Amino acid sequence: MALLNILREGEETLRKKSRPVEVINPRVLRLLDDMKDTLKKAEGVGLAAPQVGVLRRIFIVDTGEKVMEFINPVILQEDGVQVGTEGCLSCPGKYGIVSRPMRTKVKALDRNGNEFVFEGEELISRALCHEYDHLDGILYVDKASEMFSADAREFDD
Ligand code: ZN
Image 1 (cartoon, protein in one colour):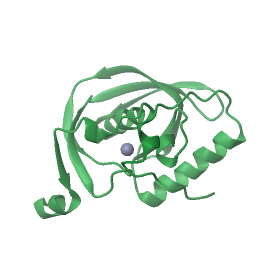
Image 2: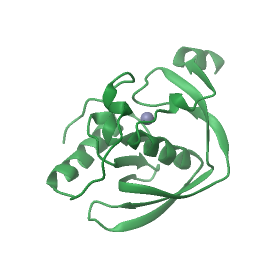
Image 3: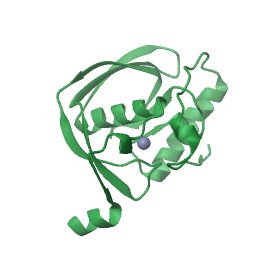
């Protein structure tokens, strides 16, 4: 169990494309456990491996019920549109307005190497797309129609 350092926007690693996981070995399992600890501490919704400096196609998403692990995820289907506020643990203090699918269906491997299909709606759909983008070196700020700071958001509230 360990907390990992979350890379900030501007770090080159965040802009690189991650490679698939070939073998789910103890190192990968350790990474998943550490990512979970890190996400919980940071109070985020999702975290992708490149955000902690590991260029592998892995991300985790907190669905509210549990933290789900996605290894080598593939987006199978996207439906509908939602436009809303989005932030990122790698871009602290900033928020932006981003259009995302209302529903996203993802296929991935779990930590036992078993394939599963998961469909997320609303916030979870947004998180799945956001985390998937990290694996291709894409940050939400690339897609945001409008950006504002956390201070401005608090003021608005
Ligand atoms: Zn992010």
